[in-house]
Length: 111
Length: 118
Image (tube, rainbow over all chains, first blue to last red; front, side, top):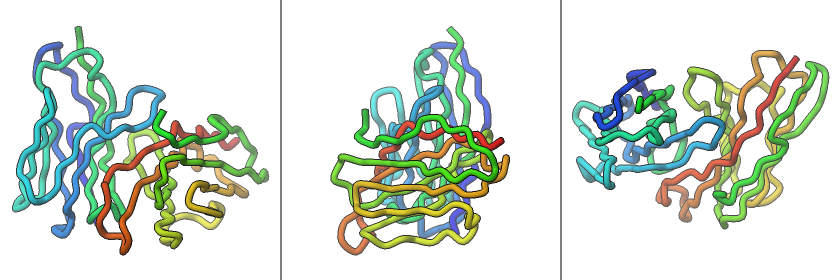
């Protein structure tokens, strides 16, 4: 089955700096890679996703890149703000079957 | 509010108790999931009900028993749990096309049920 590794487990940045979270996956058949944000005490919510037919996707301050050859994908947050502080989870799946999540990255943005 | 409601939000139970977690979705989705969230561990997929078929997860102990009476409701029955089962249990739903392979991709999560086993 799929195995997803996520790094780092914690990340602290100064407001305005960029943050990068990286994930690797093991199953080359995986074709869907979402990122979820979970604020303290709240449910995980999808913030961006990418499918295997594209290499990069951007939505305002958030971008995701995918390297299928190396089987890794990354989340990039630019101009970070305190409200970006949360736990971020990457995931990988074949379609939406058996979606496997990374262990999460706790991002802290210091004002 | 994402349209996925879980009850109870908090549950404390002894190891000999029997309790159930409930999940309800009002999004018209046809797949529902139970995930276990423990500190510093990945979200663990426990069970999937997809297009009215249950996908088994052989790694989940039999003291957890799911029930999906229809596409809008999902239960997790708990019996003789262990302290290490204490965690946040998240329900999610998604929309799958016929055949189960193509879908919107997005999981909509509930707020979770925080379970403490004494």
